[in-house]
Picture 1 (spheres, helix red, strand yellow):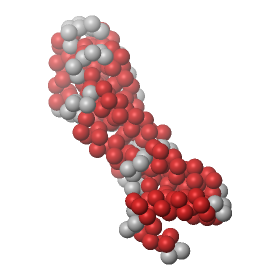
Picture 2 (cartoon, one colour; picture 1 turned 45 degrees about the vertical axis):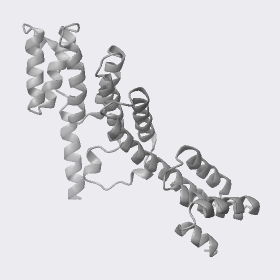
Picture 3 (spheres, one colour; picture 1 turned 90 degrees about the horizontal axis):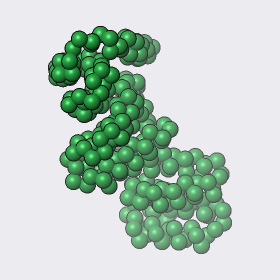
Picture 4 (cartoon, helix red, strand yellow; picture 1 turned 90 degrees about the vertical axis):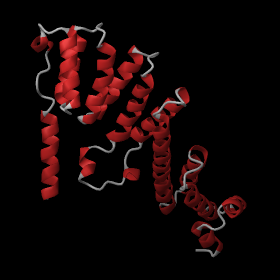
Length: 255
């Protein structure tokens, strides 16, 4: 209960952080350079709410200043570190639309992915152990697509290696979600639905480790349906590629 109380308190504090009025009126009389410099100073000091206020004021008062592009890039980071992942993602999308040919636009694509990647890994999960494979896969799928787009557009980007690593993690997570569903359907006797879920794993996440137990579910589902020829064909795939696996060995022994 104490842990839950801490979570509620922290969520309340995060919510209150965004209730301060953000008005450009507070910055009238300051030129673009002054506002930008104060925003950068706040960013260096890790005072992210203050940095955001200054960069938003700069955008409102001097939208065409020489500092605008840098400020738009910095506000992505400030939101991300707040952490306000939804706003960080929106700021990244805005940067991409405003500066599609910028030499830094790969950063915006990367941060778009990172923002979606972390939306399922927010404040609550720092204090509560949550199995992400049992959560709604929406944000994970979006992050996977974001990182994929970054790599497609900018394969030599310095952010590409990290994006690839995160895609491997997300691929396995999404494959596990499909495997969970396949196992559920199998236990419920919905063998066709179980087979369809495994087929999705095979077509979308071919290198995921969940392929092996998925094939095992497929074999058992075909057998339950009396489709022994298809079950034998699937067993042949397991024998050819994963003969040493525990899944294959159990199926051979009839377990």
